[in-house]
Length: 77
Image (tube, rainbow, N blue to C red; front, side, top):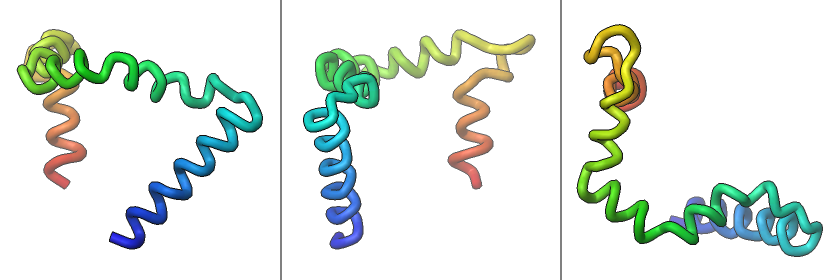
């Protein structure tokens, strides 16, 4: 718990320095976008619409999609 809270504190301090003090807003553009649309992201993920949409995109065969690649390379290792 101490390690994860320290990592979160260091990350927060680094982002604060970069974005608010030095004015590098492009560094946190993705985080800002996710913060603005957090409820929409939660609804899409909780209802599995994101998974269904991502599985619709595949290379050559329906079995060769991004979800299958993530499960076989990241989750099962």
